[in-house]
Length: 199
Image 1 (cartoon, rainbow, N blue to C red):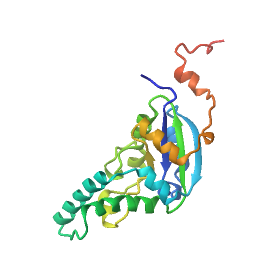
Image 2: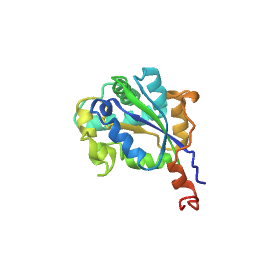
Image 3: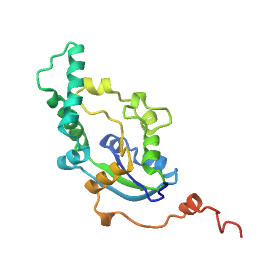
């Protein structure tokens, strides 16, 4: 069932802010017709970031086991338990996200989570499609980030699905910070008969 008021959560990460891409990123989302209902410039806390990434021991173990296998295949040592390598992934993300200001936003409209995810592109910039934010505006890769032992600098976080967006929104925004208003564009996007266009 279509939901004209579906909300999604987006963060322009520290690299996007530092590279002065805030306007370009917002423009790409805004021109789809989605409505911006909340926006703020903040420096995230470690606690916020750990809650945001929301990973459990099973996830840490799974990701860590893959890292152990990759390290061994590359002839590197794997000197700690797999779960710690898994936690290192989030530790690097937290370190990156708390390194400077980010722009947190909520966008609203039909299929907002899917539309924003399509515009943002895949998580690795090097393999992200041309035409996406990550594919067009940055050159990072998993290999480069892994070699430098840091998080991938991919400019933007966006929620995978509406349920995840609602969980994330509560971490970053109070309900009173979300503005409810009418946008004239919505008349074109959602008025079935385009009533009132002709004089």
